Image (cartoon, rainbow, N blue to C red; front, side, top):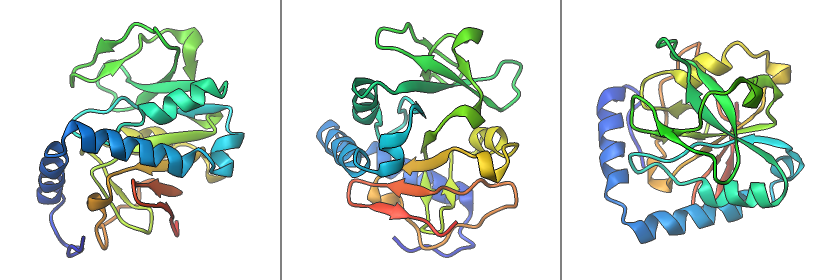
Length: 199
């Protein structure tokens, strides 16, 4: 999909979210399986011991098939949890099958915030991130809260985890405007391809 680089983020976000929500259950399941296939042989993923995922909402691409693959491979899996007091940053909390989940203020399920299970972002090998739109330079348009950017911006580039955006193919745009605080993606996986970015 093409879009002008000056296209307002708000309008683009609304359009892409609307398109995502139109996908039926079968289309979502097919895309999730295809993305798992795109990534399960990526060497950086295969070597990773600690991986962060997310639980999908609002039509986001579902990473759970890939997370189940990671759990079966013996990887430690983590989910993002909103920090309290509206700090607009994330904790990453260890997830096990059967972990009791609770809904946060946005209605997204997350594990309980127990300190023994919290991983510092820099200690993760890979973080799989949701997005609303992306371009091939690795720029990502999120939901607008800035949680991932704030959380990851304090990590030095040399110790940064591998960042992989998960997306439906139609969410690609020609060029997204970027800001100095935006944290670029290393890869983007869609149901059609695995994109290596130029970040």
